[in-house]
Length: 178
Image 1: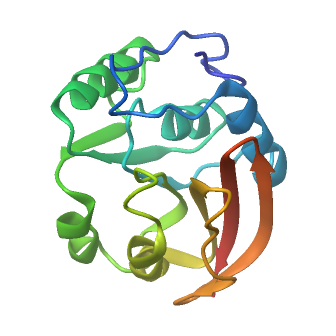
Image 2: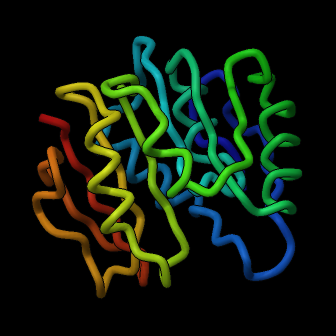
């Protein structure tokens, strides 16, 4: 697994051992950024259920200013911190070891331009996605990764579906904040 584009392009990322984390493949990550836009002129990123941090690190590599990565798995946290340092983004990334459902309500409203949500498929994206709309700036975007057979609704709180794609068993739903 590598950073696909930008200042950290080609940088290898580690993944935790075992089946507890399901990293987003380079192919799917590249496809998501083809829809979002290849590069950014600043902005803040929120990466929930961050795992390896690949989505936030990709966004930073492509021009976003800062990121908050949230993960509660101990092994995933170790790898996440290592990946942030390997990409040279330690000064631009805050890593929080908290359950998403506890931290998300505490985040400032409208604080993020871009958010990624990739919970375990068994958890689903419904409830966190509804709350996520509160922390996305109007016009900001949220990307939910999910089981393609169980897509989230077209409207979720203040988020409106812009695009939906499938890559094998992986579904990607991209929303805009109102």
